Image (tube, rainbow, N blue to C red; front, top):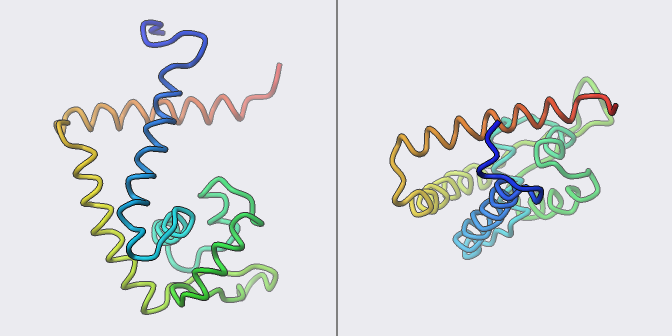
Length: 153
């Protein structure tokens, strides 16, 4: 294991967290004129990623938040007529999420704006740089998940 990038303060992980927050802020700034806050655009993009018909619980898990935190955002998206929540046919207690026609249009607009932001954020990085970062992050994520699933000794 390489220690040249680490000290006891987890510098690399701290930098990853900081970059993530700044990238999220950049996207939020770009989509604010469209009427999206950070919770709203992240929720709508995660619904698109998970696929229509995903449950509210799946979305909360994907976002890494609790259901009460998500409920207000979903209500706002529903009031804006971007999504609709439907009762799951197999589990009447569960609600599944679907885009309205307006929501589908907004997803396409969001994707375009986010793509422009991504291009700005990746400026100065080669395809090889991006592939190396992607691979390193995948390995770190798998290692972190494995670590979290271990029993405490």
